[in-house]
Amino acid sequence: MRVIARVMLGKNYREAWEVFMAGREQLKLAAYAFADPPVPGFRYLPTRRNRRTWQLDKLVRSKITEIIKARLASSVYGDDLLGQMLWLQRSGAGANAENLSTEEMVGECRTFFMAGYETSANLITWAMFLLASHPRWQEMVRDEVVQEFPAHKPPLGDGLGKLKLLNMLLWETLRLYGPLSFLQRKTASDTILTHVKVPKGTMITIPLVMLHRDKEVWGPDADKFNPMRFQNGFARAAKHSHALLAFSYGPRVCVGQNFAMVEVQIVIATMLKSFSFSLSPTYVHKPSNFVTLTPKYGLPLIVRNLQLTR
Ligand code: HEM
Image (tube, rainbow, N blue to C red; front, side, top):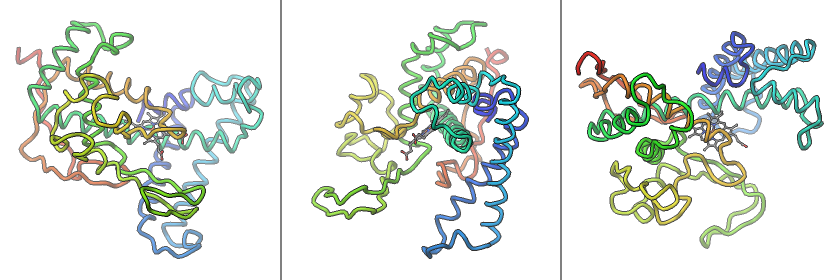
């Protein structure tokens, strides 16, 4: 959470935290709204949940707007993402920069907060689950990390690109336990999808969980943990070069995917260097899809300090 708060509003870290907590609650409320009756205008009714959503919305907007105003007044835009947007807006350097209104900047901040925390946190969680469940892989990835980043060399910088096994492990985690279980799209025109006529304006849900475990695409071991399927690269792991859609594909592909992969690599490599992990006997395997895919009862791990055990 701190990572995305610093990246987005680093200079205003304390306010970022408040914005973030409010946004997080909003996201949960929005997820509950999926179960609302499909009554037009239902979201405008003053139900308790809607009122709370509006309250949070106001809070998030006013906080970010205040931060923007203060930075503009001081002419010190900051070296975080908001600072970059302000700089683009003021300098007119970016394409369509003049169109980036304060309202849009507020929207961008909200999107980044929402899109950039739970997803990465859950990738770390599920990767740790798989490492704890497959000790041989845990050893192999640790050996790779220690070889590239011995003793007191922190796992940062170009060396991360050499952590092939860790990358394979992360791709396999995204396949089996991708943070987002589905994507949604609305058809922009009448279309035909595998012989089915789909009228304009139809909402289509793309079930990533099913696609990622489809035996026709991934082979007979599609349900099994096998990071080696990625040994020849991402595009050759399945019958289709874009079968892994955890970060989506096309014009709406996740803009934060490289950032997320580096962030997660650093966190996992740092932990593996000093600790070993095994699953606690109290762990109950129940992936639960609420906004993102999480272990319903948490992920209790037994953690051992390697310096004490070696
Ligand atoms: C493991 C981590 C992540 C996963 C699995 C993930 C996944 C996704 C997916 C599937 C989408 C597309 C949604 C759609 O097409 O409907 C998306 C969009 C987006 N992601 Fe990520 N994401 C991750 C991390 C991040 C991070 C760290 C950031 C920010 C630093 C970020 C920022 C965004 C933004 C801004 C969008 C919207 C892009 C747009 O609509 O143009 N994501 N992400």
